[in-house]
Image (cartoon, rainbow over all chains, first blue to last red; front, side):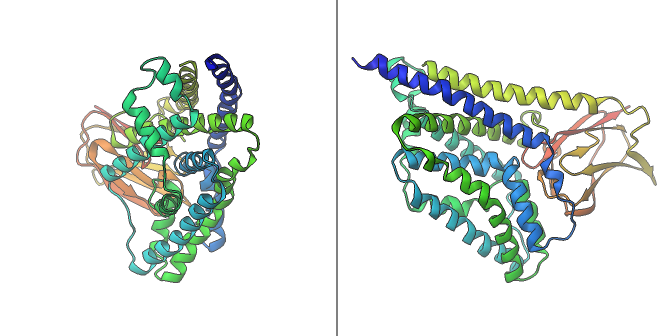
Length: 268
Length: 132
């Protein structure tokens, strides 16, 4: 039937998507190797520096966690042609939660830090969800069906159900949850916020940090706007899928190192 | 099928590349100090290993004497990145360091061998080699 041409089209899309994803990966590694994390050299934090630290955080390895999650979500929603609203809800949820939770930390004087095993479990869940969303974005399910177990069946099924996200609640909750995601910068900002001692200054510090991360995250989440016709859509989704899979593996390897099951791999 | 293979291939190229990148930079840091980078001192019978913390741990490899009571002294200076949370899985140590300052962590024992640590997210590896 039309199988061959369909396959050829997808194969062609991969030929463009793979270099795009690879380029993105190289850019990511290069950014880390350049030592962007050393750009801050202050010991007191104003709202301005919190904002700058946010910008740096959004270009750091935190991008693999938060950025990867944002990309997988936005591409998944873009697939069902719902581009704007879920993205807005995500960013609104993120910014409001950073203000309120940051304020809570400042007022209470205790941070919400997870212990090592809770962090590991959270990392594992995020990694697996991202992996499934990434596989789903590649749109290779029919390959999997035709050539038997290219992908374990249970994984394919899960990947499909994971991608059927609620378009209102999911982005909002994920946005709020980013406050707790494992990211060194978010953590040290929270530790600093402890010392602010008031709801307002704690909230404003975390808000400034969240606003600093906004430009890069917005760029990632609205990258799906660029797709107009269906030929470009396939390429975009496949590039996004490959990038999300790479970030997911990166996160999984790191979390195995953090729990001590393997030696640390990445020096950035 | 082809595409699944490609995706796995691309992912492994990325990871392999990153490993090569990070390994090549670690080779330079792994050379024994031969007295040049002396970050280990003994104060009142306690061995102190001083490690600078910013965008990683410096030095990546410290050489200490086995059998002495040992304290790791982490020195942060405007450190906001992942390395500000220290993780040593084998001793179940997870510690958030202040943005700037000195933080001491006493080790329960210092048998001969290598103690491996990283930042909280499992990156920025560092090690302390305890020698007899």
